[in-house]
Image (cartoon, rainbow, N blue to C red):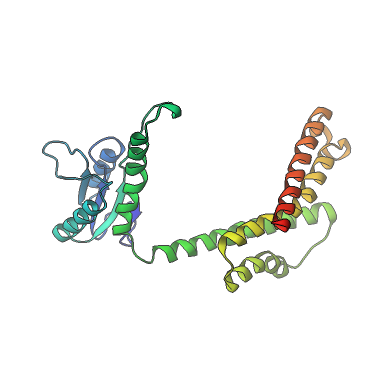
Length: 249
């Protein structure tokens, strides 16, 4: 569900609720719930039920979607909430799927959603999404920082000031953003840097988990330590190969 008005999508607000694919299944249930909550609701569907107040439309047709949205806004005013519930599926083995069937599934499930949202979502959506993604990154880094703090205090009995910990954790990401590095290159580079740390996490973990004087009854059995060691060795070898490819290529 996309809220395009700034209102809370679960409560009636300014504008009309549009349900794409609202004549059956999940879409019909959404229409019923929205109307019960007091939302004036409009429906787009390929084959609306007879007598239903709905607009017949093929969501794969970009121009038809744009025209129908413009007509709806002109007739009922701004839209407040959009639910894209149109969808189709084919229960067919992958080798038996015809290209036309594949194009139909993609057209309804993905391209149709793109057409509908492109016409409705604000141009500021990309900026809002970027800010949300940045906030998510901050949250993830903070969790990693706090986990590292617990490990350091518990195992090596060392402490780093709070401000310094967070600065060290967040500064690299902010620096990359500030200098405008290509996002794809930054992502690949970050994975390469992370690969340096994998042995320093995996190897001590396996050693500690195999020591009875530390783990007590929870110690790993020998066979599990052997299997885990083999898996860790494979992961470390793959990361060495990644480093080689990154440096050489």
